[in-house]
Length: 76
Image: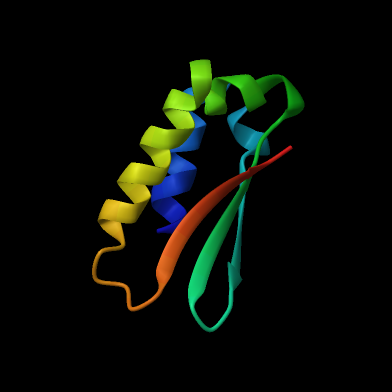
């Protein structure tokens, strides 16, 4: 899952070397915290949040067999 988010984010940004994905896991959820270069935050979020929503949809679909709920947060 972490690799999927990293590959997608690196394709979207101008500074792919600064893409970081941190995993925070508790008893019910797995949260992936995506951080990018400050200039690239808008590219990852997209107009009206469309790219962020699409990224979350892809990750949620890929995690269908996970026993826990999966979410993606964009950290600036």
